[in-house]
Length: 219
Image (cartoon, rainbow, N blue to C red; front, side, top):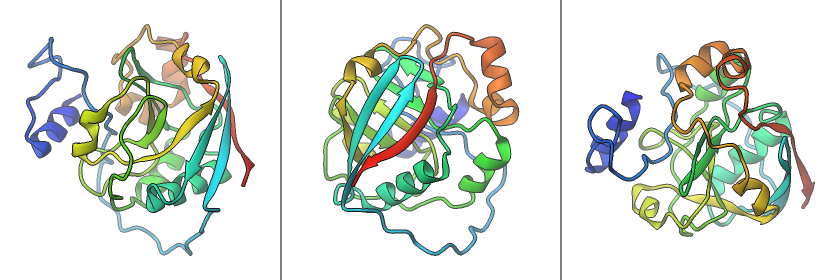
């Protein structure tokens, strides 16, 4: 997972990959960069409501996230698009690190991931801290957010200065989030997920919890 080291080099923090430090704090959420940069197609902007809720029906139960556009407009707009397209349905929580984060947002179909990787969004200002229960986009550097997100399992205020801007927070079912299977830790490889989808995860990491369906439940 060398891309984690790259991210820490960008922000001036020590590397915390398994290769160079085994006892440092958990790595910040990052996503695998695409194989090659591709110009994003021109897409008409979709403006979501100022606030709305998204229900996640998961293998562990249901939790609900309240999203506020004023917190991070660009991130919320992208999240709204992803939910409306059904992107998260059947996605695994492939990186669950106890006392840190639960990360998701890699689709089972590589072409679908590629489609969204071509439409990366610029950063939002961090207006709210990475408190327990907040929902945030992962990235591997400046202006690289696309389709991966994470839920903070504890207060992770150190991520604020690194540019991770929360877009909402869990308002129902935080106990479900806390119960997500974490036995695989950092082991699932994002590049393998991107190439093979859920066939890789179900074969190598069959206990991973997953999203059955994510849908907007209220304006």
